Length: 258
Length: 148
Image 1 (cartoon, each protein chain N blue to C red):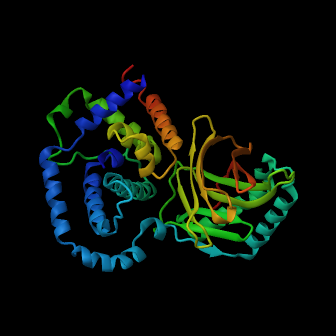
Image 2: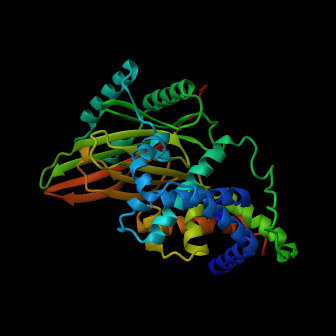
């Protein structure tokens, strides 16, 4: 089927399924009624702080908790040491997971899912500890989704310098199709947004926006197709006399007991 | 909304929610974005939140629980031979991940230009191109036998 033909069929489907005029008029009347029952705009503005505080679905839904658990802290410190040891040549291997790391991340995700049954949207692990994004409601996980670990590493060096140093690294444990939105810890604007989609051939599309002040990287938005176990350089940038490289890797996490 | 939720009753409820949210947010609309972009963004945010909740809540898929036709919505031309094709298209769209569905709904069904669609979805322009490409690829695969 050609693209034009597909688009034409979709448009015709949309036209055929457009609600009848009477149904639209009925809906419009309902909306007008609901709007009429709303407080006037001035009151809404005064009340908006409350609205923001209680109802912003994404923010409330992703109530990020800083959990500095002993075991996690230990793991994070080990991760930090690994990065220190590996950063010299700035190779893609920086973003590789070892079997031990994957097992540990699977255990963390199992543990979090067991603690917060059905509510875990993402877990972020870095050298400082672990943060958790929870859904507002306890719900069962999307059955078709697959658990994953995605590692993002930013390395930098001054121009004309040989050695690279790791300026930021983060592991996100989540599922395919989950929309991950992690605010920066520093309170500054920015954060990490990520969405992973599995292709039929087993590879993954990772759609990521990195706007993380601590990474010192100019805002970067990249979409890449990654294969399991093959870390890739997804971005090279130069800014303020520094070269930056961003590496990413992905690994599926087997389902545990959680 | 129907094109995102694929269910008329849910679409009606969400449309009301979108307009209520827009009315509440209107005093804070700063004019930096086009009004249509802003409204589209609210609509897609509502739809995304709803679809995530529905996907997680559902133990049975929509395929097992077909959408009832809303009263007053059915049109005579839906009785035609295209009804089966309609059902297949709805099922194919339902199987698309939400981000891909939103991309195809915006750019193909609503003719929103790609740069504006990228602003609505807060993604980079190449990402929007990729999403539409991937959505079309998956839809072609899912619907290959319908018009063969």
